Length: 408
Ligand SMILES: Nc1ncnc2c1ncn2[C@@H]1O[C@H](COP(=O)(O)OP(=O)(O)OP(=O)(O)O)[C@@H](O)[C@H]1O
Image 1 (tube, rainbow, N blue to C red):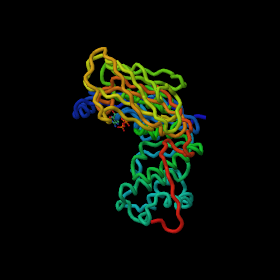
Image 2: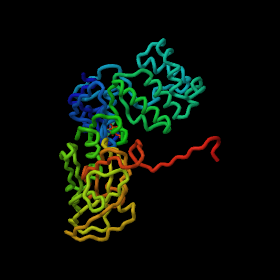
Image 3: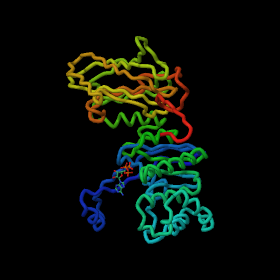
Image 4: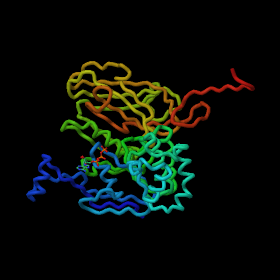
């Protein structure tokens, strides 16, 4: 069953070159504006229990989409349907009245959510408990810090598990402790079957929470797929400045999507993993590995940076570094010159599968100039060695002591 259905949705605004054009148009009836689409031809469905992340640059149209879906603004064209009880975590606390106490605001926003006074009274202890603002709940809202208002607003908006939860960066407000609490509640809703539409600039949050992601660019959906594939593509377009910048996605050996992007000034020719002199794709926890990257310069380039990143099976970044951070200067390279970079690390990873991203770019990150970036260039399987069993994504050599009484 579809919880959210969006068909050919579009939103346009009138754009006036001068302020007085609007008045002129109103008085004379003569058109003085251009129409600018900020969303165009958007179609997608979100099924019951599915969790979808919306990503894109500033101004891509993410908030506009959520405002349409929550009824704050009307679309200019197309249709949409949201089925079931909706909770929207958009501008948290915006509807609160500064002169009302916390409790009065809870009743007011609860009523706006369609709850009866009896229901709100029943939910109040849990709302207070989750918000953790103590006696402030009896004080006027104007005495609250912005963090307290957000805590209360989140607590009310999520007092009942909704069928559809619409979240716009709401988790980036408040302190780290409360962000964790909010995230846990959202994850719990997800596990209980709530459909989630989640706008975020945080790749980690999208990978953690979403089954699927949609990439918007200038109001148009340019990519839809697994969070990892869409975020890799997003990472590639961040650095797109030159006309001859290429982005290619293809299915790799493990069935996942390889993303290669860059202006081609340096080509990554080969990526291999070694342990000793042995070429490997599986190692034991803690085994020393070498990451050998063979490259070719297609232009004269001074001091490029070469780097790598291991990601876990969900695409979360586990460890990465580059020649810039390690202060290894790669000297001036001539057209056609080949070179190799070898990184050595202990595979102190948790047991599981990891993908390797490698890149050649300018400076400390690829956003200024990306010569070539290659996601899923190699795969590494980490298997147990003779270390004591452990859990987690990294292996840290632990020791333990025990004594009776008080340890000094
Ligand atoms: N009321 C408005 N009148 C005119 N243009 C608007 C209006 N509201 C939004 N826009 C424009 O619509 C475009 C999309 O804005 P929107 O806020 O949806 O982007 P976004 O992807 O949420 O960006 P951000 O990540 O910065 O929040 C922008 O170019 C913005 O300037």
